[in-house]
Amino acid sequence: MPAEAGLRERVGWLAGCGVLLAVALTAGSLAVGNLEDDVRGASPAALPGALAAQLATGDDLDASVAALQARLKAQPKDFTGWATLGLAYVEQARTDGDPARYPRARRALDRSLELRPDNDQALAGHAALAAARHDFPGALRYADRALAQNPYSERALATRIDALVELGRYDDAAKAADTADDRRPGIPVFTRYAYVRELRGDVGTARRVLEQALGSARSPGDIAYVATALGQLAFGQGDHDTALTHYARALAADDAYLPALEGRARAQAASGDRAAAVKGLERVVARAPLPGPLVALGELYEAGGDRARAREQYALVEAWTALARAGGVNADLDTALAAADHGDPKAALRAARAEWERRRTVHTADALGWALHRDGRHEEALRYARRATATGYRNATFLYHRGMIERAAGQRERARASLTAALELNPGFSPLGAREAREALKEAAR
Image (cartoon, rainbow, N blue to C red):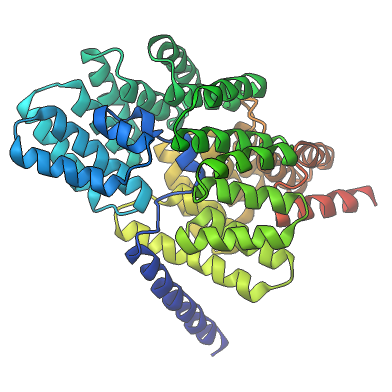
């Protein structure tokens, strides 16, 4: 039967993609989540003591972990060493995508607490571990416990901001960022302070704070990290030339920094250099086949007429989702939008609803609204699309989604305004989305 043949073909695609992705995992190239998260996440400067210094100077993290392990064999009652090792495991998991490191991190942090109950280093480490696992209520609890012991813990202050942002508590996150800036000004706090301001629509302050952070950055890792954040901010406002300048600065500091490589490719695509963008994204997904860059590459292929290669990228997203979930990773937000646009709308809606129950942010509101729209529930979708744009956060994709939902709901004037705003903000926000927005506006003008 045709349906059975289609199902077999789809299973075949996924099986092949699963093999490719397994190879990538074995090579240690898969980082959990989107590459953009690396820029919003921990800076090496937020890690304690000798480990922070080793990371800041570019020393190998695996070698640092081995040195810590050797030290703890000789001095097994060093509670600070156990806390540092736990944080190092969290950092390893973030960079190489191996969730097996999380139980090791928990055991090391628990050992630190056994040796010295309520020490702030281990509590802050537990906060970072919970955040890495997307347990944001737990991250907030541990951060508060750490700060009760040491109000100046940089790691706890930074993780507390992260947790509040990821729980959608933006007013509280702004207060936490102000407190952290008063107590421990520095790159980890500056970048989070900037992101909180950006979420509230204060792009000017976000830019100034990031420029201040870049001016104070000294290590290659910090320079790449902050310059990439500036590139993402510029790209989001449609300033592609400035974005490319920032990405060049990041890659001059670290020519293998994946978030900068991905950001540069997106800016190149928006600037019309499709060949360079494809080459750049192919380099990224070869090392980190994550939903964000996979979809971006697939859409570039599709926009260029190569639907077969586009389907390969979209199928890899589904394979990534299966492997991530098998490893205990919550992948719902990472995959809901990809499934809505290039997969099963029903699956997208299930994932988006599940994520909305866990955390109610502008990003989950946008994902749920778009999934509802793709499932034909336009009126219900509107509530979430409006909530996604209610904080003042300037995001062209959110405006595009809202405009298409308004159009489907019969609100033509509002749809025209939203789609126009999306293209005015960032005319190259997406190869396919921007094209669809322009076509919708042309149709409305007839």
